[in-house]
Image (cartoon, rainbow, N blue to C red):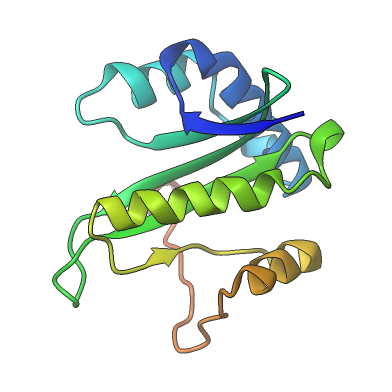
Length: 159
């Protein structure tokens, strides 16, 4: 049983969407999940530049996990960074170090692209995720607070 990590291709769109949906359910935002396989296809593979990049893991030739990311082209360090948006391993493949393989592949991608950092967020209740990232050597950044401005809700309240 060999784990292989590669860059996603358009024919992976259905599996990428399936795992994105699984993550939305896990993180409890499936009621607002608006992604479709067609959106994955268009935004990730037919658009230039793509809205996101994706690594997939294969375990016994089946897609077992995904890591979705995009580049932040400018930082204060005058180097790009990578923003990790989604990481999920299919339930039936957990415990096989697939997440670790995906994160190591992302680290290589960051090095190849001269990135200074990889950034991401994790839900405060996701203790297993936090432990996983700490095990890799990542540190929680408590210097900054995370804010969101929901433009659609703000616009609806003005009307």
